[in-house]
Image (cartoon, rainbow, N blue to C red):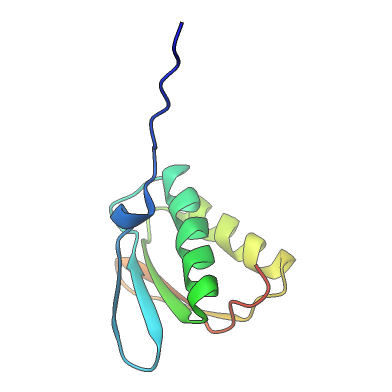
Length: 100
């Protein structure tokens, strides 16, 4: 019997663009829900780390559990970040991605 593996989260389909000034990637995760949101966050963070870039994540405010998970993840790895709450979204800017 032959097993086939699907790639659930190909890196090419992560919603991030390199159009942000100052060597910063921008990742829009507003259309995702937990647990996929957290997995895509980690993949985008790792990709930014490999490129030596900072990254800005935009998440839906209704995904407060995921926002808390992301904050806990970044604090545990002693990564500096800035959180900005807006009306519908939450923006997390990770300035230093060296400690993933």
